[in-house]
Image 1 (cartoon, rainbow, N blue to C red):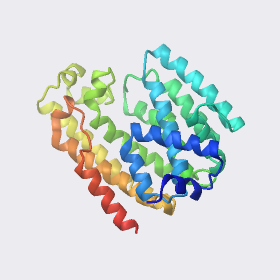
Image 2: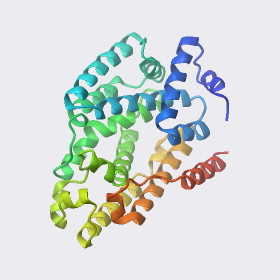
Image 3: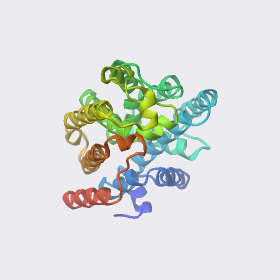
Image 4: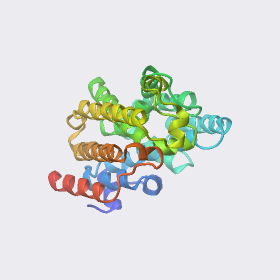
Length: 300
């Protein structure tokens, strides 16, 4: 694995202030999401790493503003962030290192800014006041309006000029699978925070109430509900496997590892059963290391 300095040079990032902005963005990712950063550093083509790290830092920045504080504080924070992002994209400069690095990445990779605008609009209109879904149709709209643009402001940087329609559709399937797994793995924490990420009509069909889930209640109806949701997540994962081939060659090992990690987490949720209502289900330590080691060997 090349040093960070050599990685920046491999990406053609040579100006000292720009390199400093990318370094600050990468450090933010390390603090928040060590596993994805490690996957990028170990598996991705070095020339892509800084751009994708900046994209991941920007995606996380928007998510953090959209999820912290009161609804009013979130809305105000997103308005300010949207203004600063627009200024950074138009001028190519920002005093915020993440925005400075991301604006440079968008320009260098020629990512259409429509993806950025869609993500920021979705954060303000969907995520900031989110409490849950009534139906699966609402969930699908959430993917279209927020989750998919959020992934593509990051993953879209792998493509010169942004993803074409086929690649965007593949990543839409991938984000569907990822979101279903994340919602199950984070079920306990989301419920504590007042968020129910299972469509309410699905609870009704199983005769399960939100109060039961919040209590961590076990029983045949709850287990049947969770089993059905795990089955849907597994089917979504199966339908998203082509995202590896749709990725550029330099990112395919990362895409493969991401899919394997989701499979590991889904299996952990399945083993946890109703315990997932009382404690979030993580990757653990051993499984990610095995996935990364296997991906590293196969990419050589």
